[in-house]
Length: 62
Image 1 (tube, rainbow, N blue to C red):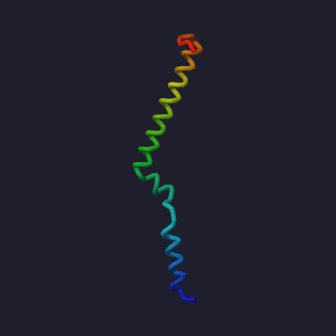
Image 2 (cartoon, one colour; image 1 turned 90 degrees about the vertical axis):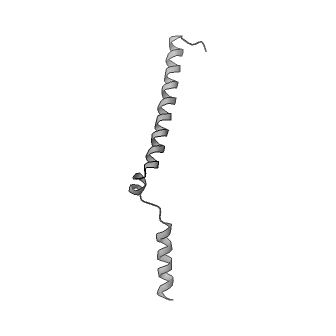
Image 3 (cartoon, rainbow, N blue to C red; image 1 turned 180 degrees about the vertical axis):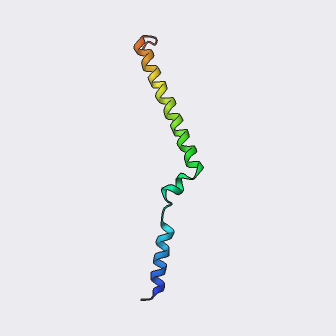
């Protein structure tokens, strides 16, 4: 066996590595996506809570 095959295997493993969490967190697109998801979650939850409050107060007829 030669050292060339070992080097090839090592470089292949390095090429397949996923980026670290710190590298991903520096990406602005990740934060933009998280902000959009958080905004949608807040809007949906507030709409559900508002509907439940209106139903319990008798403002809406089910």
